[in-house]
Image 1 (cartoon, rainbow, N blue to C red):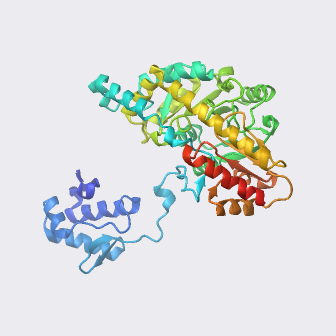
Image 2 (tube, rainbow, N blue to C red):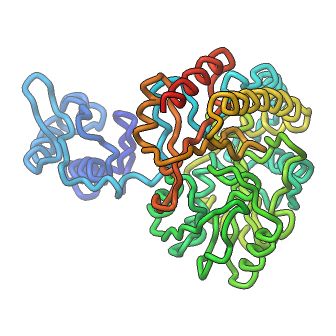
Image 3 (tube, helix red, strand yellow):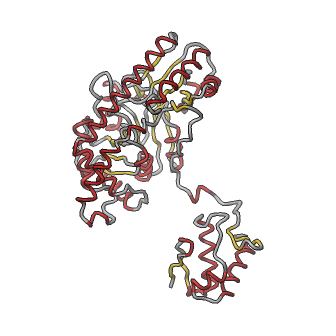
Amino acid sequence: MAEEWSSLDLHLPLDRGQGLRSGLEHALREAVRAGRLAPGTKLPSSRALARELGVARGTVTQAYEQLTAEGFLSSTPRSGIAVAEQPGAPVADVLQPFGPAIPPPKGMDLRPGLPDLSLFPRTEWLAATRHVLQAMPNDDFGYGDPTGHPELREALADYLGRARGVVTTANHVIVTAGYTHALRILCHALGPSHIAFEDPSLPEHHALVEGFGLTVSPIPVDDDGLMVEGLTTEAAAIVTPAHQYPLGVTLSPARRNGLLAWARRTGAVLVEDDYDGEFRYDRQPVGALQGLAPDDVVYAGTISKTIAPGLRIAWLVVPTSLVPRLRAVMRWDDAYVGIVDQLALAQLIRSGGLDRHLRRCRARYRRRRDRLGQAVAEQLPNAHLSGIAAGLHAVLQLPGDIDEQALITRIISHGVDVAGLSGFYRRPAHASCGIVIGYATPPEHTFTNALNALMSALRET
């Protein structure tokens, strides 16, 4: 019968039925193979481990010697026993394909993808957290529903219906640990298949989907959004209809109807990534595609742009036909949003705190967008700034035959980090020269300097 050995905070099944020495060897060998004991990890001395296990010291010594001979462990005089390097270890067998962390900027950060983190609503979040901790019953500290606390799912259903035109109930909402997690469970639910992505779109999402064995089909985008005629027999299409990422165009009404007709005709799933739909500056935000066809569209949202990505809270609004499948996936998934944060967000929504925070953010981001537009109009009269009606970034398209990579290098040399447009294309030959400018990211006190440095680098070009 196996028992748990918890030394080094690592739980190992130690099967004493096959003999103490053999059981210990097997437990350690499997921990090294699976990556739970990483190369370089120091193991307890034979005396300490023997005392913890209640066995003879010689039993541990012999197990260590055997695994050292096999190459799983290494022994160094006066340094003790450690896990040896495993040159042939297949990393992909140990790690699941999560999205990579955003690398630190090379200068003042004007890359797309982040809000101004200095705007985090600390006072409101603290008040919501205090309210939650005072009011929540003890049972809420248990494991709970893996698809999210009912209070947050109900609050999200109400908020999304009011703010984004989403048609749903709490039973159709699934809370996830960020958008990457949402995309991961969708991949599990869809199984091996072809997934259509807009071209351009975020390369990290392509990599995640392909890491799960799915095939990516890039579909071109023009001024009216996704070119629906490029879709064929894909099992799903991931789209950003309100504000295409990164070009910033809005999916036209004709294309919306065409996309929904394709989904109904083929049985495909549409995944609407509404990553920054709350930020619209020229009119009311464009309503969600999901509102036109709740039975055909999976709606994905997140607080990464509205509040902060570090909270790791996102959600899926799922058609009735997909609810059982995704709930089954979530039952065995190991990612989870902390219950206090879930309830704090629910309280922020219910109290109106989220709406007030969004109004403050819209005002600041609109001012920054206007300053960027004015600087381009005054200093770069031959350039064109697009995608500015909504969102937290804009695309600056430049005239003539300009080497985009050389341009990015020059901008970085001026102390500013931006993204090149071609890097978002699955087929770079289709890309025009441009840079994607995230005007929301810098704190307010650094935005002017970042904008001036960017303009200086572009004028030189």
